[in-house]
Structures are given as structure tokens and as C-alpha cells.
Length: 383
Image (cartoon, rainbow, N blue to C red; front, top):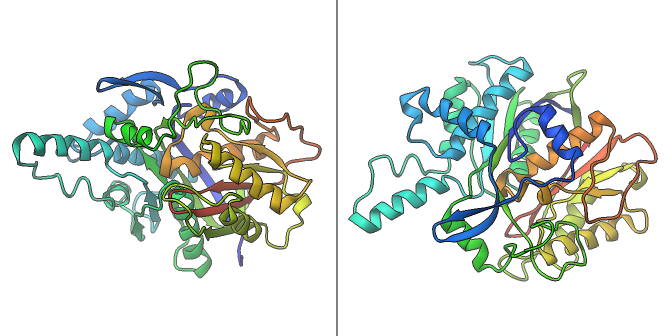
């Protein structure tokens, strides 16, 4: 990389809350935000937003008549983008690039419009523009009056970190000076949950934690869905940034199955090596794993880490046991956890993996993400 890309600010809304102090307390606790809720005629383990955040988002929806018909994923995107703009000290109307993606897009509206169509044979006037994937970044750009480029994309569960990759390329090329990037996902709907259950990867646990990410001895899949959105404000070489992006990596697996990656996650091996670059392996202090809570997903990523690091595996953690899998937004929440560990100089582990103790100051952390299609991303952030 030609420049150190600065992470100037971060804003999120998730099952752990939206206040930085509350999020830090949540990570210090062994409690999970996952709970049982009924969707249609069936109960699922899910991680919903806190009621206080849902109330705040409802205020945003009512604040403008144009916003009342938008999908929850877009409303969450507006919320976090407004807050990150303020934290970064940027202004509405600035030339800011916007790249906020989603794996599923306007899930709530899609299902609502489809139900209406099946019942009546007709659909609402705004059914197309409000469910187009590109409406996520375009509404944020409208709300912030941004004069920069706006891009939306879907690369399944690695979407948010692919947005970050894209912004790095723009910033490195000098085609932009500021970028807001991230992901937003509102997948807690009957059809989306039924799809995950049909894949036989959804949690059916009745005891202990519903989602057992990084429990490499589990005998069945324990993935749980959560909802949320998060963005970071990126620039070049800013002094006193939260952290710096000092390496990026990406790779795509040769698919063995529609939903899986290879047994030793070759895509992750390649993406991690690329992100590490010339840095000594011993200097990588921790890895925030993608670890979706499935038997193969967790184990294959762990095998990839072993292949890259040998016997000197860094401290390993993840957050999906606590907040569920937020699909395209999940990479930003992993980045948030990594930033917290850098800032606090505290390692936040899981209830299932070995207890790691930091033997030296935490300086460099890798963040992994991968999705259906085997499209892995690894980001290296540094203090």
C-alpha cells in the first residue's frame, strides 16, 4: 500500500447497542444478545436491535415523508452514516464517497411486496425503486448531500469488507479523499430465516449458548442471524486516527458446494498472506475470525490460520456468538471489535475457545470475512 489509510470514525447499530460505552460493556460480558422470537408460525433464535435503537430509528423514518416507505436496512444506513459524519468532523455537502453494501438488501420490503402480489396480482408503485440494491448508498448520499461517488454492491457475507477494499483503491489512486464504507442488513424476516433453516445450518440448540462460534468440537451447526448496520469514515494518513489500514487481502475459493468453502479455506490462506504482506507473522497479535457458527465454516477457517501461522497461532476471537451473523454487515462489526481491542489494549475472547492472554502490546490485528461463493477478504489494521 502507498498510504496508511486512516480509520477516522466508526458508527454502528447492532444487538449490542449503538453507544460506544454500551458496546464496550457488552464485549466485557459473557452474556449474549441472542433470544427466541416468533416469526410467522415458527420460533427462531435471533439477535434483534435493542428497543431504544428501534425507537430512535423510527424517529428517522418519520422525519421525512420520503423515508416512510424505505426498508429498515436503509433507515439503519442513514442513522450510522449521519453519526459517523459528525464523529469524523465532516460536513454535509462534502465530496465524500459512499459505498455501503448489503447481502440481502431490502428484505422486509421484498417479502411485503411479494405477499401483496400473490394476494392481489398487483404491486405498489414504489416496489421497484425501494427494493433496488443501489438504493442503500443512494439514499445515504442524498441524506448527506454528498458530492462524491456512491456505490452499492452485494458480495454476500463479505460485503462490508469488500466495500472497504473498494474505498482503499479509490483513496490510494487519489480519486477520492474521504469515504464512508460499510454494510447494513435487516434479515430477521420469515422467508430469510426459513432459507437458513432449509440449508440445515441454523441453530437448534436448547442448552447453553445458541450460537457456538469457535467451538471446534460442536457436532451440529449453530448459526444465528442478527441485524444491524455499521460504517467507518476513511481518509489518507490522518494523524491521531482510531487506527490505520496497513494491509488488505482477497481471494476466491474454487467452489466445492454452493454454500461452503474448501476444507482448509484456501481463500483465507491467500487473503491473510496478502494482508500480512512483508510483516513478520509474529507481529500479528490477533485475528477476528469470520466464524459463522457452522461446523465446517469455523473449522475450515481455523485450519487456514494453522496453515499460515503454524504453531504460533495469534489470539483468536469472533463476535457472532454474542450478536448473531449479520450477513453483509458482519465485517464491520468484526472491525469494530478489532478497533476496540487496539484502543483498550484488551483482548475480548469467546466462551468456547482457549483463553488467550496478550503477551505484548496489541499492535496489528487481522479481520476475516467470507461468504457464499468463497469470496474471502482480510483486512490488517494497526495502532
